[in-house]
Amino acid sequence: MKSQYVDELKSGQTVKEKFILSKKIIKEKRDGGSYAMLEFTDRTGSIEGIAWDNVAESSHMLSLGDFVFISGTVNEYNEKLQIVVSSIKRISEDEIDPKDFLRQSDENIDKVMDEIEAFISGVSNSYLKKLLASFFEDQVFTKNFRLAPAAKRAHHAYLGGLAVHTRNILKLMAKIPSVYKSLNFDLLITAGILHDIGKIYEYTYTKKIDFSTRGKMLGHIIIGYELIAEKIGKIPQFPEDLRSKLLHMIVAHHGEFEWGSPKQPMFLEALILHFIDNLDSKAEMIIEELRKNKGLGKEWSDYHPYLEREIYLREQQ
Ligand SMILES: [Fe+2]
Ligand SMILES: [Fe+2]
Image (cartoon, protein in one colour):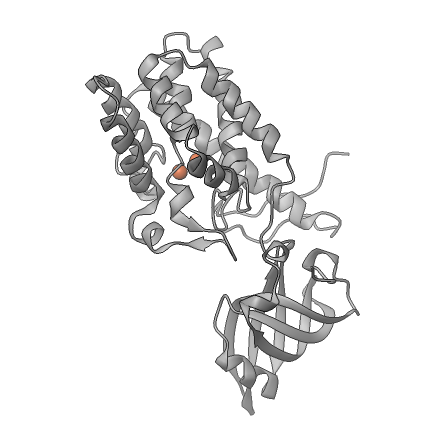
């Protein structure tokens, strides 16, 4: 276990600790020499760092994602903490404890999975029931579903994030039939449960959360489509219309072509899945900004690259 974590660092403190190098920009100084703008990450967050001259030189040899041991001092620059690095060296993966670097959900994942299981049990259509069972009765699948993040950075970017995001979507979906009465609730819930299962393979999450090769090449929408189409193929007489509708919901859940959706939602359940998915991912981004900035006394967050705006941070008086 580390003894110093990013979220506990204070201005003036000396740091001697292990981190992941998550950003590295080397710049030339006007008088010759160089400096390096760095970022260090552990499971609690990220902090910027700066290294001058010969320390910047030694960071030339480092790659993003390397585990590093750094010495330095924390100071405040532009209302943000940063580490002025006095030495930095790469360390091997054997010298770290993965639990120090992978953020985990604050929620009890057993409880989250129980909530998801309750929705699975509520599905009465026999084909959708068989389909869900074919995934969730597979112990390897369930183990990975519990562990997977929902993103590398954007939302629920921590272990257990996929399960929490899926549970949130199901709870929001549970409210829908009281407003829109003529929809296929079994289809909606099944698509809600399965919509992001491609993320299990889109990311790697043993040492750090990153894209897998398969994830980079195909993305979770296509991977999810493949997984579901394959399981449906093994269920005798699975109705063709139900198959097309469920697969359409997977490929249309990002809603717009520019958000990586091969199709736009073309019926009510698909449209609802898209908007609920969008709601939960964006709500989580705002909640995450509030969490990250808690106690810093800031009125506005930094510019948020996914939401493309700053977030107002003051809580209501
Ligand atoms: Fe998605
Ligand atoms: Fe999603």
